[in-house]
Image (cartoon, rainbow, N blue to C red; front, top):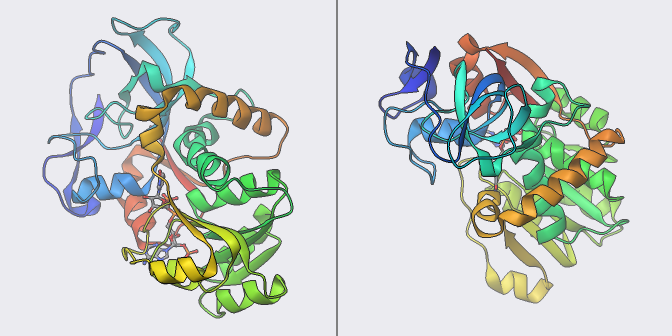
Length: 327
Ligand SMILES: NC(=O)c1ccc[n+]([C@@H]2O[C@H](COP(=O)([O-])OP(=O)(O)OC[C@H]3O[C@@H](n4cnc5c(N)ncnc54)[C@H](OP(=O)(O)O)[C@@H]3O)[C@@H](O)[C@H]2O)c1
């Protein structure tokens, strides 16, 4: 089968090699799937570079999130049949940027029937992260103001949809007029273009000086620092990622005097520490998709050959929604 391989760490465009490799055999607890669609996610970029918290042994095939069709199930699995359409993480080193991949049976969930393969692929990590961040960590309530950074991006667009579905007023921050149009289309009540406006001033203005109750921050750097200037009394800042490459330091005296909380979120840890929480959240997300309240924004449906360039553009911050590779 064809698979992209990393044999040394570096920029994806420099180190990804398209190789002809044997189709992997599913081990205990694993499923062999035919890849229907695999997502471009920041962790894929960071794994190629070698700076992600998970460092798969070399060589490996990236592609941490996918939609696949079950071909066969390994020992110690039950309840799966060939042809089942599933979504979830890949069992690295056999990731989704290939014709076939392995998935951990305990972590996969059914692909919602209402979504096509490309839409279903980012419906796992991307939307689960949004749900756990907004509901379990930040306890977002209807009527509250939610500020979403990189609102037109993959993780951000999911948070905008989930925030609207929860009855929040959503302010989206984006970089540039094209992304602003995407954020408006997604349903943001207020859109701020950070390239021409000071988002903290806009948040203060549109909330009558109160500030945002919840901030969903996947960018870090100035996005975090300025969020502390416009966070409401008893507000919650959810730390989701550092797409800017700048990991900011928090001024705890400032959190004390303004009574706000800084909440870390690593969704993958729930998979390990509280795995029973994942399937009920999937059921809730599926119901929201069935009701037409959330739907992944797939900006580009690309081929397997496009993986290096797609990851390059994601890392450069020029993409919107999700890029999905269909072998
Ligand atoms: N905590 C978790 O469990 C978890 C789970 C999944 C993903 N994540 C994290 O979430 C983040 C977003 O992932 P994603 O795949 O959905 O990416 P994405 O949001 O589609 O792309 C990143 C966005 O960040 C913004 N950005 C601001 N400064 C940037 C810079 N210097 N370079 C690149 N981008 C910059 C850009 O949007 P604007 O120009 O509009 O600002 C860009 O489009 C990543 O850090 C990822 O690791 C965390």
